[in-house]
Picture 1: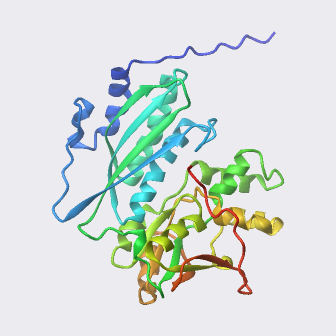
Picture 2 (picture 1 turned 30 degrees about the vertical axis):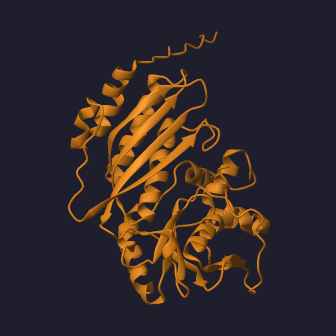
Picture 3 (picture 1 turned 90 degrees about the vertical axis):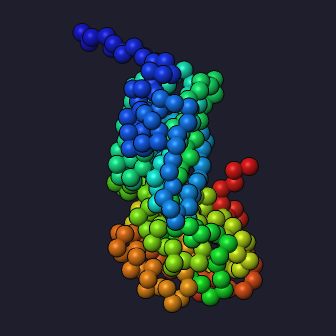
Length: 335
């Protein structure tokens, strides 16, 4: 006879117990956080540096499905903000975090969540500086504010692209959007290793943090790709008052994404506009091509030239024959 299953009782500590047990160890690398024993942190910015700040929020069932491991959710939360900092040419230093958690989130979930943060802190060289936790009757809401350092007055903006600049992108595009479809049960005919790869890229993006600071002095403009390559490029083109032309065949895709495109070429629009890539778009003067490729090689980051900027307005995507490819929805809308 089978033994009855015994479920482990849920343990939920109080706010201050959680701070001491789970969050204070994450602040050990930030002297100004004072072990999270006070109401505010004191952060010293080195002379000649600017403090670059970016905030992101992810919501259960909206920005992640809800069944992911807590470690993966933590990684995504931190990495999406590090992507913003990298695209500004900043070196990540600290972060603060606000968590709105329903009662079903117990200590075991939080312990695993903080373990994910600890692993990424070691990987990216950042530390927790403070934050807040509150209860909610709604979904989990996680907000992270990242602080990075960049040479004073040198931060990369999206508005600096010039006619004649080349359009570079890091990594591969489309994995996050296709991975979301896989996580929802799509592409079942795809090889399991390819599906797992794409799901992994959706759950745990790989922002090119190591390249960000090296783009200062090379790129005229930069921004991260989070809401879709074409949609984000439209923001850069508008801010810079230029036109961008993308060569679809030059957009880098992973082997797994290429496998899908070979069978479903119509999914090119998903790749180009689906979002969740967390890579960097950069406007690079032609004379700086060797410099950007050398910096990328040293950082271990793949880069590809996928188009150019010219006089005019808007964004167009061209196929191998130079014909425009219509993109009905260029990117994810938060409204």
